[in-house]
Length: 167
Image 1 (tube, one colour):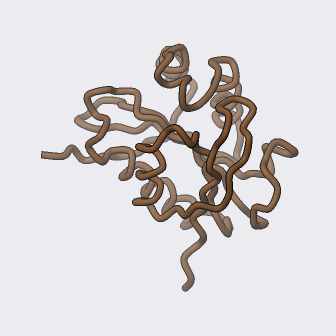
Image 2 (cartoon, rainbow, N blue to C red):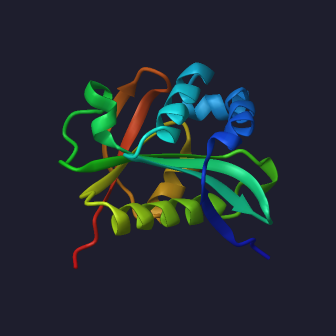
């Protein structure tokens, strides 16, 4: 039986857990170096232009997701994204919860929250071309391949996009 996945706002009280996840090599392999992850998460926790979320299943925190107005990334965001794009990042830290659809459920939940509560025209993700599991999860959540870029932290990466549903 698949657990119900829910997203709750991340707070400063979650910082010790988030830092412990950022130290893990399996998380760093897909998100980037520990310092970069911590800086991104810290920025999201302190910004009104971000939605930092703890992913919860079976009553326990199993991962982290954030959506950030791409304006916060400044020049670091790849060229060619539609105006009003938000950027989404996610990881499932709990190994026993991986491969069970929890990531897709969290992606869909956060994607829908961003479209329901902001004027975002699209949501982008940057995912390593080596992380096929994540690419498939993004596809299931409605993201489509846009182009390949060279990410300074993870190397060759797909930029994938989910556009705001038409009314």
